[in-house]
Length: 169
Image (tube, rainbow, N blue to C red; front, side, top):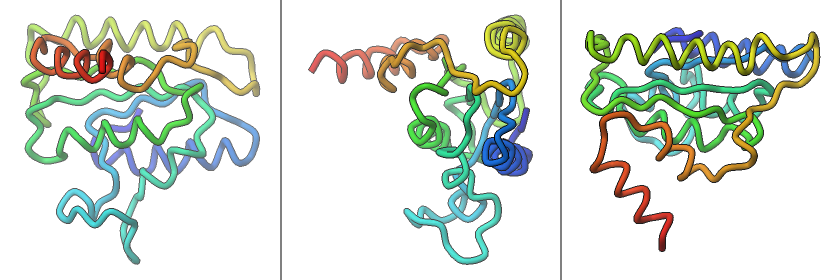
């Protein structure tokens, strides 16, 4: 589990353990960023000295990845999670939890039970049922990124319909 700045070491370690043939049971990223520099400057690429380039590590992760992010995050822009989920290999994308109106440092009391429920589902589905040292895959069955993102939205009729429109085209 890596939240905000903690997503950097979490992505790095998940990619390293995959390289060593020891993938994690799963990786949960809460309000993750593409890279430290990209929080401030939309460079489109990893710049020298950029710390924690999560966008470069995630394609190598061989464990289910769940992303949690609020649409009103004013510290790490919401689109960072969308971009990060898009670079995760499709077999490892788990259903995200994308919460309309949630900021960076708050989980509204009304959302907390859902938050805990979805993390528990992820743990049960991916972490507990996997055998040791076997590559773990998500159960999204190759679902498109757009469908996965749509299914992951909570309390977001506007965003959900925007994704649905994209899918119907």
